[in-house]
Length: 43
Image (tube, rainbow, N blue to C red; front, side, top):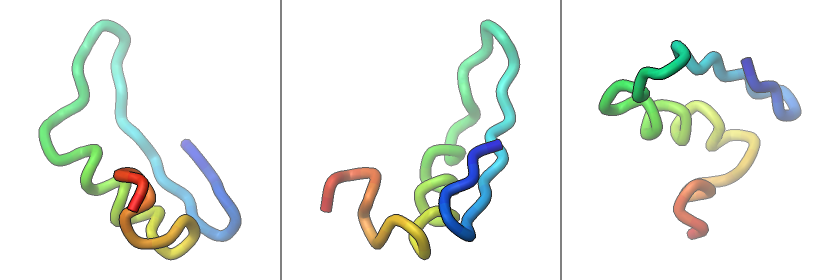
């Protein structure tokens, strides 16, 4: 679990497995209120 300010995101992960398609986008959207729109892409 990551917590930044008032935003919290839980990233499901298992040792040796890739993250599922769409997970990164979901993390980006969840953290937008704290980090700003496009934060992941450096926008």
